[in-house]
Image (cartoon, rainbow, N blue to C red; front, side, top):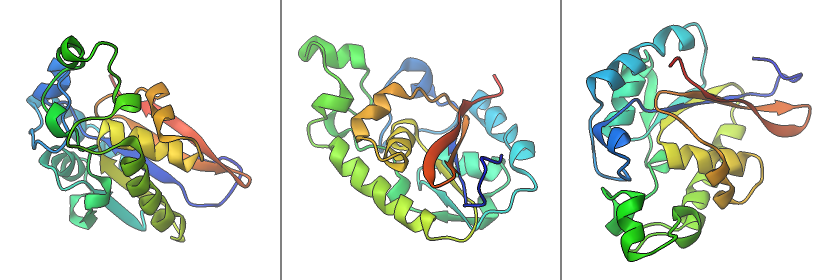
Length: 195
């Protein structure tokens, strides 16, 4: 993809489907494996990423992201990074929004946070560190991670508040591209799935 500049781009890949993706459970640090569908989704990413050269490929240490990266054909060159872990949902890990709202009506991860986990500002600080590193590289990079983290990463790339990630839907095994238009950081592609 070209957006009028030779500045490096960042390809974001959300992991494939898991059982908790289907059930709507918040999946933070719990290490849930890919489903059979999720593995097929990840394997279908390989031709889309083949032939691209990346200065660095970062992947979350959680199995769903690692396996997506491997099945997409980039596992051999990937660097495992805690910086791209999913949002730590604390006491809400494994719970659905509907379950949480029984106790806390109107609850939103983006504005209300989670007990015993990370705040939006905490996640943004991690994302800012990743962005600083990736922007310092001379070439393109890829990040295999998780839905909420990648949404925060995109908002921070644009210079927006982390809570603005609530406006960016991101499906399993999707590919997005953070790019440049002249000197302006932009989203070049978002939530591109094969399904």
